[in-house]
Length: 475
Image (cartoon, rainbow, N blue to C red; front, top):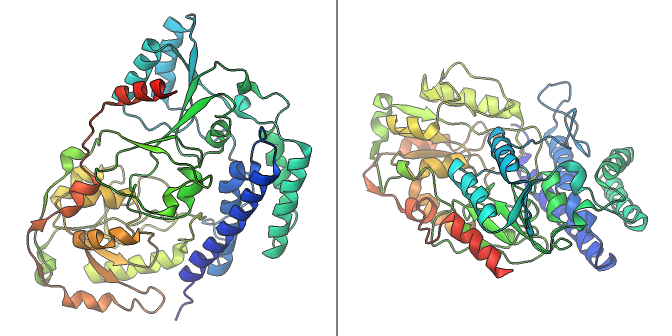
């Protein structure tokens, strides 16, 4: 029997989060009013370092395997986190056209654009029009402009607190050198963005990106409101602590394709700064695929059904403690392929770190999931804290969910989720105990899809443009 490290990983992540949060609160009390809380800037990096290394240790990974690397401050493998994200080609083209025709105009306000802006072409054009009509100079921010001033006193205090954590968790103190290098890269003697118009708006992607965090933390100095564009297609569905520092920290407005009527009573939907934010609904571009009803499925004749398996995108590090070894996930997929034979599989389009299983019929990963899923009688998932689940759940295709114990679902929506899935709990560490309950599954008739009204259909009373106007007028 294999060692079950999943539960320990989840417990350790929670413990580390609260230790770093304690340090963040110390700095809130310690720093001067006009100084930046460096722990807020580094919250993501600290969690990435400590949680990843501890999960890897608990899971007993071997680093001679190319699937893994030792997590270090300021790096993802051999790549630096600085300037790792570039603006999309579309953003650059729109900005170039805007610059050619309008850059010489005198604008009284600024709209600052961060990294990873996931807006549709329509909304990007609306954004440009809003700037022209309401006298905002559109500005693509580069890394040198978001560097911050940090006093020597705060820097030393921060390094001392991190040193204590390294000692407590028995990590090499040489890691402090990597942190010092990263601190040097993000600090400056000239706080560039301080000299700004009296009023500005920041539009940013996830604060998981360090450049976005550096820009966001300057918002008060430049009298700005922060709009964070949804990095969370499962808004209101999932619940994990990374939301507090990657999605909602410093946020004034959160733009999301979430459904209507979602009442979020969950501490993880409050930033580490405990500030409230306003939710703005964006048009759901997948709404044409939604269905109010589910197909029926008879498990007594599965061999006659067309089945698609959509595996998770297993990664090499972890923020939220859901780390699973690629070898364990490969073994699970091999077991699954023996049970279901030559069914279709659609692997993640983004990079993943496990071997392709040719016992399945491998589809082109670039295929659009929502365009092909209507062809299937059943879709198999083993991870539902993802955009994949929220997209498929809005369609009419039944979902067979193998619960491996990795998901982070909000307690008050579990009943709703249960109405949308056919769940089988499987212990991958005990010879896949629980899978045998598949034999108890029978006929599931047509029924109403309750999920679609709450998480997929948007009732947007105001346009994206009108929401921007309202934000401008609230200053």
